[in-house]
Length: 467
Image 1 (cartoon, rainbow, N blue to C red):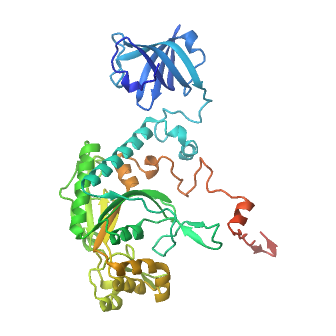
Image 2: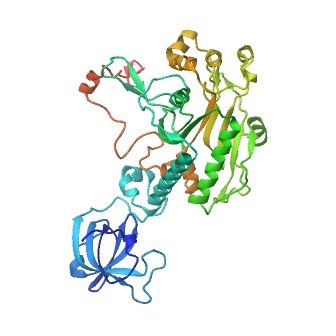
Image 3: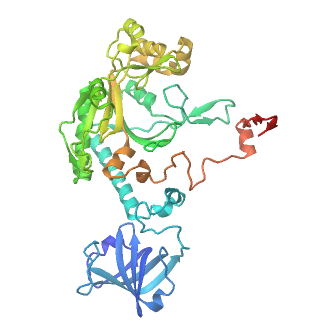
């Protein structure tokens, strides 16, 4: 007999069925045992004899063959989709047993230490809340893909191993075995590749992509994260913002109808006015900040192009160096960098930055001037970004894009306090994977193959003794 999902047993038609899953709970009533069986689609009650049930325990994986029947009057459970049905078991097969779990699957938030949950994440993901979070995430990503395809976008994958270039955050680097002393970098974003796709003439690109940044830990940040990355040619800033507004209104209507968008169209606020009024560039504009179902979207525009780094005594790009300044006057850019505004915009929601983008510099001389303002020598610019400058000499359209984060957006819709709650296998706050025990050491043979030596820490001398 073919196995069916529990959700497919909605009709108590007295026909034979075969269901498989995990023992959610066991209740003994004399010679009869009630088992709540759980699979990805739901829960159903199984009725079996005590002899058949024998030693069944929670989280054992079993298959049951039996007859789907209507529950007796007064025994219907309106809280589950199959609450009017039970299966009278005739045959039971135990597929695998489970030892005592480190925590209860039914435990509510806060009852289990987060590090224990992370160590046994495959058990944590059995919980209904965690399953619902990942299902919501999946639905949103499917919706985005369908929406953008109808808007004429093409999804294109870009490389994971690329070149290390100074763009802001620290890179994760990967040693090359075949090129001793040289390294790849994991992409902080597909920034350069998506701009090169505009040079290639694709005009409307998108990708739901993994990005990697070796940054200091923070509650709403992970070393690897997922973003919707898109780029468009021959567009103005407002066209990009209108597209994103249209997309996110449609997502909420389809996948989170219980949420209410507080203001339409989404407000466009300048960087200067939000800093003066709210003291932050990601203001929470909700009318009632205790209302989790209120969504206050906004776009923050007209950011400064450069910011002064006191410790380094140099100018740096506020967003990234590929952002287009609101002037092409190179003399003015070099003379008064602190006065230059950028075609940069952030996308905020309920006090979180959930995306950022810009129109891009597509004139080689402007891009080169920006790097010079940031303190890069011409030789260094050519070494790090020569491929971009050369590409722009072969006919490049004006272009721009945006990259909304998937993790933070799903976190907000799921009413969760951390993005770790909406990522299947996240890292801890200090970037460790407790389940896989990563990062970890590698063998001496691997180090030799990669031409790498591990530098040992020098022992400190204290009171004439090494410590």
